[in-house]
Image (cartoon, rainbow, N blue to C red):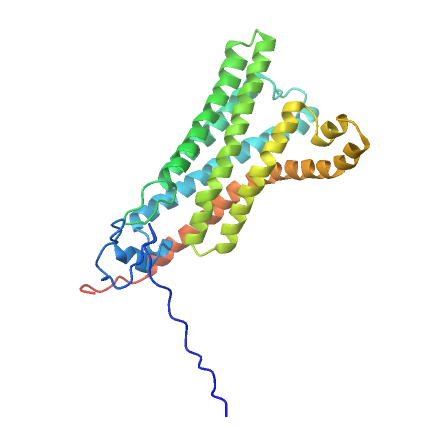
Length: 304
């Protein structure tokens, strides 16, 4: 007779500190990590948002909501800009987007979007009490706020200096407008890519690994696509034409896959920015539902 294999559950993995990875086996629940001083209670319960500090969770919720409002403002001005093209054909009396009035309106929209982004990330990046690690580390916080400030500088250079102060100097105004636009686009691209990192962490802590992978994938695609598109834009020629310009039959054969890579890069740069508002509204809804479920739970009786 053969003994039936026992189906005993696998032992749980050893408890380690969330902050430094130190082995906490054998230490009391009320102790602290000998390596970094983090309370062992934090490592035992994990870093899921369901265990987060309610006041910090409220700040996180407000920050995501402000980011969402900023995305709506930005989308509204993009829609207005696109709609102005057919409207200018049907109604020739409408001001053109190259005019000073429309430039000021667009500048106001960009400034409003940057202000909402600044206030939103200020709430999201706030230190979390009793947490092992910050949701937004210091270097990411510096990049996010730095790109917001750089975007404002781009608007000042393009509109205030280019369209207003140097309006009579056509060539200088056009040059500054392009420089300001490039600063704004570059700052926005870096901002979107870096924002995917805390978005991915937030998705993991919400128990959404699928969204976590999507945000990380968007960041990788952007890191590959943005430099290729920037190279094509600076040279004024697609990469495939640059390769063919080098001459030789081999270059002609190589030009086709290079053209496909160039096309993929342009599609990526076009689609990746849409991940930002999608992530904001998705995570805002998840955090909102979590706060509501926590508020509906009965309070623990005193003494327990």
